Amino acid sequence: MVEERPTPESNGNDTVGMHIAVHGNAPASGTPMTPAPAANWKPPACWYEPMWKPKAYKKALRSESPTPQVLGDYAEEYQAYQKKREKQNYNIGKKGLWWSLHHEAGKDDAECLAKEREIWVPKGNPPGDPAAIDPRLLAGIAYDNTKLPTPPVKLSPSPGRQVVNLETRIVFKQPLNRVWVTASIDHLGVNIAATTVATPKALTVKAGTDNAEPKSCTYGLSKANGGYQVDSEDADCNITYKRSSRSGDTYPFSASVVWDVTWTDSADPDGQPVGEPTLPAGNSTYEQAVTVKEIQSIVRD
Image (cartoon, rainbow, N blue to C red; front, side):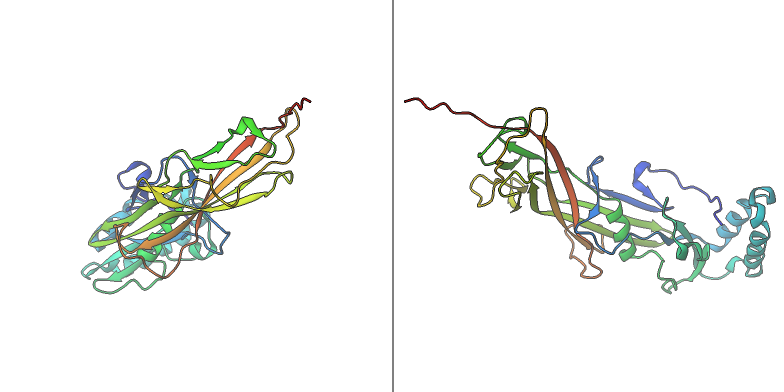
C-alpha cells in the first residue's frame, strides 16, 4: 500500500527522499553512473529516514488519513494500522523518533514493500532495521545520483578524415577531473553524510571494425593541469585502419573511461576512504562515426 505523505520544501534536483540532500561537482548532464564491468550491485531501493517526534507523528498520521473511497480495498488494513498506533499512543512521552520508510521512485522491491511504514527508534539506540539510513546507504544513494562526463576525446586525423595505414592519435580536449557527490541528512538531531568519489583511471578505444590493427587500445591516464589527461602520440598501441569505409559508410569508433569509485563517511571528498562495502567502478563512453579514406599515390618514372 502506498500512501500520500507530507512533502518537504523542495530543493530542486538536490533533494532525495524526504530529508536527504545531494550535492557535488557532478555535471548536470552526463552519463548516469553505470557499473563497469557489470557488477552484482544495486543502490538501495528503500530506506528509513528520521521523520517525526511522537506528537508530530500523531498529528501527521491523523491529518494524512485518506478517505475510505480513496483507500478502496485497503481501507480496513489502514484503519487497523491507525488503531495499532493509537494503542501505542504514538509513543508520546517517550524519548526517540519515528523513522519513515521511503521508496526510491521507480524501484519496486518486494522486500521493501513488505516493511513497516514507520519504525520507532529510542533515543540513544541505533535503529533496529538494516534499511535505516546510515553512511553505507547514503553512499549508495550518492553513487546512484552521480553522472560522469563524456570522455572529451579528440582524434587526429579528425573523425571525417581518417586515412588508411595512418595511426590514430588520441588526446583529451581538456583534462578530466574527478567527480564527487555527497548525500547527507541533518534532521531532528540525526546528522549523517557520505561522499562518493569517482576518479578516471583508464581509457579504452575501439575501432568499430575488424578492418583495423589493432582493433582496440587501452591507455592509462596521467595527472595533468589539475586533472587527468591522455596523449597517445608516443604510445605502443594506436588504432590503424587497414581498409577505407565505403562511400557513404562509417565505422563506429568508441572510447570509454573507467572510473575508480571510493567513498568516505563524511561530506569531505578528501576524507579517508572507507574500505567496505566497495563500490563498483563507473563507466562513461564517447561514440563517434569515423570516415576512413585511402590516399592514392602516383608513382612517376
